[in-house]
Picture 1 (cartoon, rainbow, N blue to C red):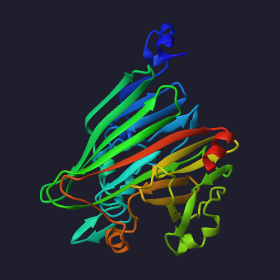
Picture 2: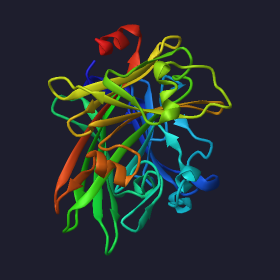
Picture 3: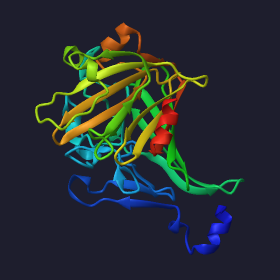
Picture 4: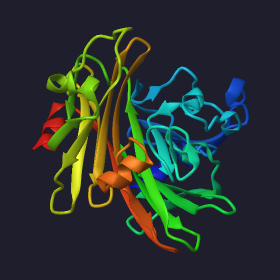
Length: 344
């Protein structure tokens, strides 16, 4: 049935496609504004408008998909940008966007200190809007837009314009970002999409699909687990995180797909990555008790500091007024057949 026909049966569009602008009130989340989205596929997700349009919550038909860290939702006013202070307010969630001047390990470069993963995910959105649109084919879709500015006098001036879009009956959404150098000098640019999969989608019943051409351990500790990089286990209180760099070869449109599928629940999540711009990928494997998460993290650089990225040639630069575009497609997997089709 087409949407125009379904409208005969409803009093308000909220019955089949709901978007709400809400404000949280409890604890360190007090005052945080969110956009809640519910569509007719059974997919629900929230967008944190005070934290760079990140996505803390994503679920499908009652099953949680992302990992929410112990601190939960935290207002940006509590952000500590020194060293590992980022972790005090690292919600993780389904998506935390890292950048735009630095991602990865804390470091010092050119006389300046940079904390873990940069500032982007703690900056409130400006110029934002959301609208349910009925297009010419009468298939309504929701589009949420906003801008995040990471700029300072005597320093770099970079912005991110984000658009998140989903259709009312489709179990997927897209993230389209444009990062622009708004200043008048060439600047470094680093970005990482820290996408975190958690319980119950992530469990020992889950299968990890990362179609690598090459996989490298990030350090010696990770090297000790290289033979089981894609294996999941029971939570272990003494587990120490492991990270792996994966190199992909995209299809004819430069798209590579990664996925995690839970065979017991028959639900999973897949991410289409444009490897022409997001040419690096980090897998974060953490099997700890209460810290059970796997990060599927496309980015444009390595994550071991600014100097390391410059030395290994992965660092990206934006000329004055130049923009980079990034695109991700997030889709729910329902049933083994859909998972196998992705793998093929």
